[in-house]
Image (cartoon, rainbow over all chains, first blue to last red; front, top):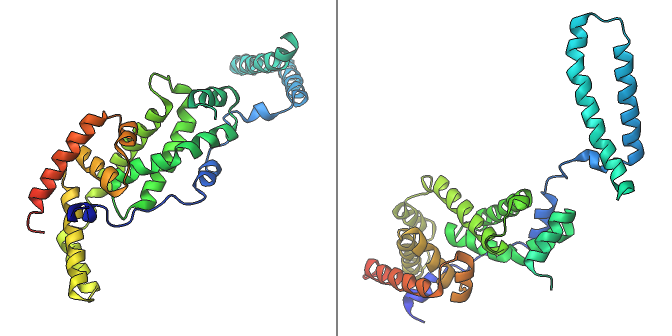
Length: 94
Length: 181
């Protein structure tokens, strides 16, 4: 080994910490969709509650402009419900 | 042992953390070495932070990984890029080598031979630091981390023959710069 080789090999390189992989795993973000953890029953309850809420709001004697404002919200809730229904029904339809 | 493509496919289908852990354990040392070879001596903890960032990025972007290249190449390239970015960010903060050598002489009033040896090491480190980026990385991988040429090819994607010739050129440059050491 030449003198240059010896000088280039200094200082002794560090090694990776013993618990590196554990630290990596601990710092990973939680799953993107928290709702995916909900049970089908909880999801079904939430859907029925949404329908009930929409029905209640729609039957209130509200002025025209507030209904116009609430319509897109109602469609949003229905779309979300449809997605949830698909998730509930998917295992049954398979 | 399950292959990388199988583990990647399994992780994409299940998002199972245990599968990802296997990928981390398989590649952690090499990712660390790539980061270390870019950042250099005395920056082990930074290299470890880079390695951690790389795995976090891989976890978040694995769905976007198209599989054109091997998973390991994708990972090592990410480590190279991240470490290079980090190296550039902190480079301007680094103390000039002459100043650090003066500090060293003041801090260590030990035997003269020790001081001279330290000075030579510092000059070699400075000479390596002044090499072009790829040469610098290859010199550190081969001489400092003692990685074999076949592994360097795997880590950098540079063919073994080119690695050899780059190392020879880097060595010549170093010998010229350090002629009086």
